[in-house]
Length: 199
Length: 141
Image 1 (cartoon, chains in turn red, cyan):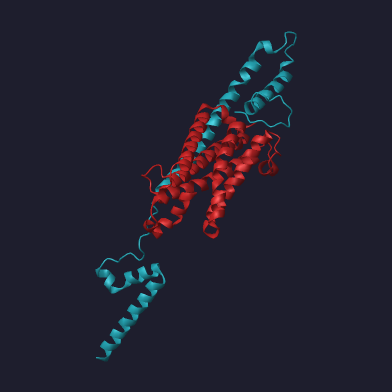
Image 2: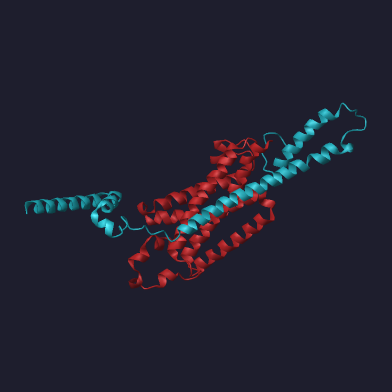
């Protein structure tokens, strides 16, 4: 195996880790928008970063898949990448990644078309980000080569703990947005930044 | 008197033309304004209002740069680890005298070397379970 042929393999691994980290960051940003745990970053700023990081996660996921497709050793074809349980290597673990990719794509596309979609549809699809995070994390832990890496293990643990904590806060704590009387809600509050707070 | 009226009318027409040009295209307006006699006295104002930067523009650039840097850093470190594993792995296999049977002569190392190198090359990528069937794909370090 030459050094040139391993470039794709190394790219796939690196892009997978970066995509997972970006998706995690996007989920944490979305939870920050809905919980307002931290007061300092303005919601509009968090929303912009949340959107941008989500887009970057899609880009790096595509790089991850491209690396797997072009790696001559692993020999993945389009069916291995897009159809669950086709892969000869750990079909279950790889299927989790494929489903997570489809969820990521659905969340991203519905967010891009948010203004044209019924709010309930957008919100329902957006809530699948939690499932996306779980599937992507389990996919990385079960099928990733770097699952034995201590840094990766700690990153997974910390991310899972943070997402779990923020989710619990979102479920249990009263909503700050709904606590305000309706007359305080200005039209500026009802921009997409406000819409995202319920996401 | 007539010349003065004609000149004034002509100046007025030129001014209107310049205004229309400025309204139609910002760049043309800026050029026309700079060419007008009044522009020589006063500094020309900017044709278009400076576009306000997005508050998160710097964060976007920083995040994109950080992501690419992380990608390159992880890929580079993986490549270094793989390279080190490849250079270190053949040494005990090929260089150990015990690997070759005592009865073998000097003619045998050549065929023995090829499978050993192939297996270590596979092991660096496929991990410990490289001796499985060829169709089984495995992610190694």
